Length: 164
Image (tube, rainbow, N blue to C red; front, top):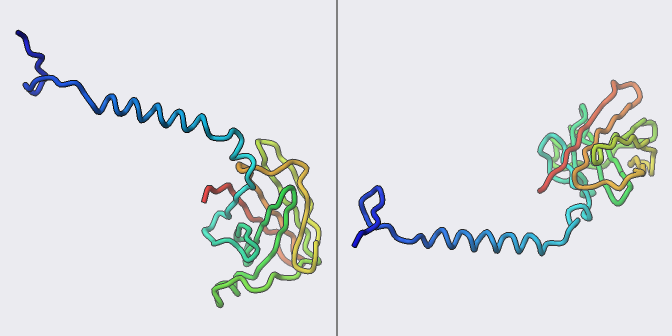
């Protein structure tokens, strides 16, 4: 009676791990099919600046623009921008109060699903600039903020998607 021999010389046994792997993949596939379709697109976009900053005082993403920190908050189609002096953050460890924005000219350039939209930001109150997007921002969007502060060179901040 012949015995199947493997390269190592021992008898060939049926592989239990191969069967377990097949079951594991089947379970993963079933769970993946049970997840709601479009769940990722229903949640609000989560952005971060190119530098690693914790969320701002209003829960928005923070990015650097020259000597300033910019906080971008997105709620529905609305964008709200606040400007902070980065020297205050370095000296005190927190962002401090937002700076006045009355004479600042700003726009947000949004890239949403490969469509580009420019949103003019206007003073919402003394310390925030606001605007509304025509498209609904989603989780894969990117944003570039352009600022022109009187008597200063133009500034720019970039925000990219994050999964954190």
